[in-house]
Amino acid sequence: MDGGFEESPLFGKRNSPVPPPLPQPSTTGYPSKGLVMNGSSLRRCGFVTTATRDLWDRLFDEGYRADVSINTINGGIIYAHASILGMASPVFKSMFKQLKKRGHHRSFSINGVPYEAVRVFIRFLYSSCIEQEEMEEYILHLLVLSHAYVVPRLKELCILRLEEGLLTIENVVDILQLALLCDAPRLTLVCHRLILKSFKAVSATDGWKVMKESHPVLEKELMQSLIEEETMQKVQMRKINERKIYLQLYEAMEALVHIYKDGCRTIGPHDKLLKGDQPPCNFAACKALELLVRHFAGCKMRVPGGCIHCKRMWQLLELHSRLCADSDVCRVPLCWNFKERIKKQNKKDDVKWRILVRKILRTKSISGAPFFSSVYS
Image (cartoon, rainbow, N blue to C red; front, side):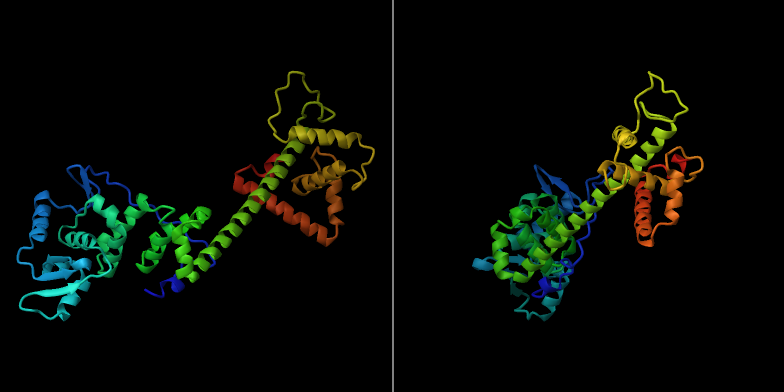
């Protein structure tokens, strides 16, 4: 247990994986496994009848022919049956083999846990039931006991209940440490994700301050995870922004072909007469591109590099030429000329353009846009 923090695989250089979904409620018409109503309180039980459950509760409460006494803090004593505890927990079974009998009675102690929490734990071993109020009050003690004495069903219930609503910003650091010690990987992941999501609020809690003093290695790993998470978010944001740019270029290429092939507003092929009642253009990039085309047509500084707007137009025309499927029938100006110019371009510039074209094609494939070959046909 003591080495759980250093050896935990959670806080590596990779982001923690998304935890699997919680089990869904039963749709068979019966109560979900582990949930049985008892009056106004909710009990977590298996599929047992009320009479059977009450019989096991009475056996525990009355201690009929009990042969084990469990000593707790403040002098509390709980009586139980060795055969039942041994069947419910392999740890108890091994313990009873080693304990010496005093007559027909065995005795041992469970320290560090309140008397009531131990009593709730032992009663669960009899009937597999637990009151919801008791679960919420002693859940951390029950998680420790279920792990220490290997009671998987109770451990599962504790973990699910924590994930269902008992995990908060105030207690998440304490529960994370407990999850690491109790070998609860799913709960560890859930705590880790909550800490990264609300780090500013979590780092201001008393639990974080105590953890910082008692387990500096864990604090260091959490800080490293936070840095990696922020780095990954920045990388994702950069990729998203790049994808937006490539999609905008794709839309600009569509609009460019539309303007020179079909005609739009006052710009279009010289052999087409645009009607006054022509419907609005459906290309989002068309308006901005139309203004750029009109500027390019009338600018006195067309030399590339002389005018920033003309330079942008030259780049769009070259990009179109590299994407165009058939320059011989293309109506976009200078398409064929750029095809010839590309053949004489130096290798370094050609590689840059090829990378840009490849990224645009990849982006439009991911976005589900139509292929350029269909646009330019």
